[in-house]
Image 1: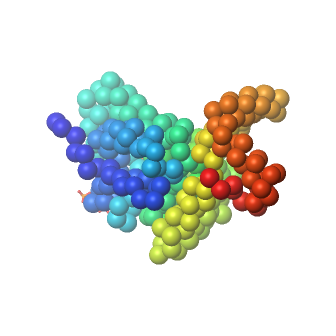
Image 2 (image 1 turned 90 degrees about the vertical axis):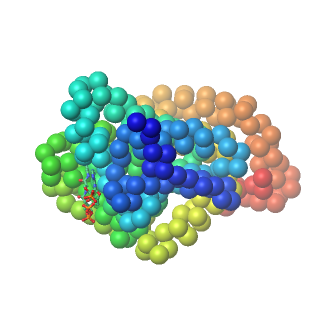
Image 3 (image 1 turned 180 degrees about the horizontal axis):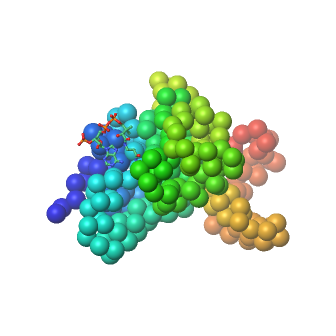
Length: 271
Ligand code: ACO
């Protein structure tokens, strides 16, 4: 059967790629076709010169209602272990790709966000939710543990007591609570969500793109390193980034030291 290519869509405007889960009548839950399509679209978008930031959001009233319980779980389980493992590779594959995406990424959580949705949520570097959005690790409600990285996501982002409560009860929390627990950076009323995310994306677009990629990778990598290992990694990454983008870095120093036209402590140099 040919995959439905409309399950995820994107458009590009003013340096921002707006990538959307697009199964609104199914609350944007992730079926195998969507997982395959997302990987293709990330490939298409990643090195476009007119894209500096990627925003991941959902059509309709949902961000993503997690994995498709029918098409991802039940139908693959009926086919056997090979099909189950393939479906997992496809889902985890695009989330991993998103975690290390070449441009900074923002999750714009506009509505329902469940279970498997925590994979791409965590994969995005920053996350802004609507106050009205609803989050839950609902796995416990239908009898499984939060797999597919979801337990790792809450253990990484949320204090232990809150993570445990969230995983064991399956209760919904809204965007405000998700922000309080640091599952997202902040929440704003739904009516202001796109505007706030656009403003944040524009801040990122004003920065040196090589420094952005090196920095986002560094923040994820150093978490699991000793101080000494992190120090060593950062020295080497800094040198690698410098040699990759000599001109941009030199211009930043030049505008501060020679032209005195900006202060790096207060904003970005003029690209
Ligand atoms: N898997 C498969 N189908 C889904 C999913 C899902 N995760 N979520 C929604 N749908 C389908 C519904 O079956 C329904 O299909 P239908 O129109 O063919 O009957 C359609 O999407 C619309 O959903 P409704 O349930 O009718 O919408 P409602 O607004 O009443 O409820 C809600 C929304 C609360 C999000 C509900 O759909 C729901 O509980 N979804 C499941 C959420 C969930 O627990 N996801 C799994 C997390 S665990 C994991 O990802 C590993």
